[in-house]
Image (cartoon, rainbow, N blue to C red; front, top):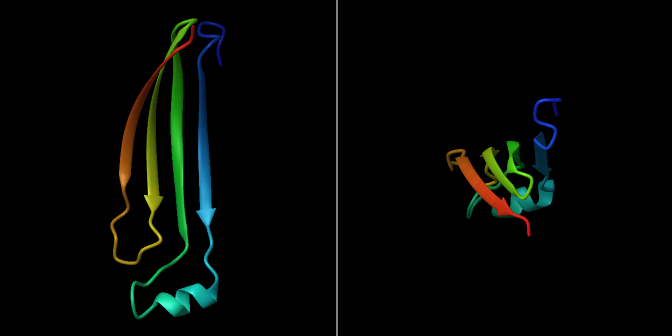
Length: 81
């Protein structure tokens, strides 16, 4: 990461779930579906060599038509022993 914080790390990820045209057609009169995609970004902070704190942000476009995109903030604490 950097010479000042060698145990820290970060990353970004992206996913895509593509639905077939057949599935979209079958569900259009019940609950319309569409392709879904989302992304995540995180920063892994090494508080101690055996303790890490990881905040992350996730954003997605849901597969259900008419549903607002969720924006989720998370925080994870990991202890290694």
